Image (cartoon, rainbow, N blue to C red; front, side, top):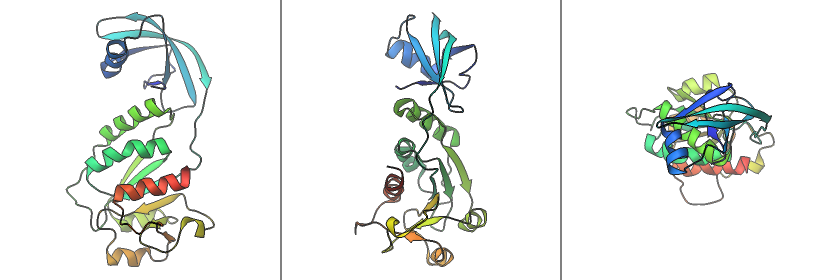
Length: 223
């Protein structure tokens, strides 16, 4: 663990409880002599807290110092991901967070099942756990758009990941948003809507799963 997340990090005193308390003081057996590095995932500061008291169900901590230690992604990459099974999203999310994707825009497209509903609070908890492990300091953002048409109306400049002979290196000014289809890809009607936008494919002739394509495009751009 690189740091502990606490929404009130920065205040003069905080209380560690719940899962964080169990992990730190029962699983890892942290002692009262140790310091805790804490972030709130909203600012650039790494806060150092002194553990003053460990109780049965919580720990009382007071602020010692704070240091500016920003860790920003190399590019403000956003992924517009046609909605797939939430279980697939949850499994893939830590990889995208570690790579440095700034935001995920979930888009309902023709082949997205309307029965799929995302639990944004759960996704945020997954991202927080990932940040604690990898050291990323900023919270990934989420947005849900109800159709491809609505997405195009809101975002005028983006690229498309689909079957194409074009490669990323063929595009001089890469957009900050890349649209990836769900299982089954895009429908013919959607491809007609997307034909004027820069479209790229991958060197591999294999057909990638949606989550594989999402991770691949993020890695190619950010790593």
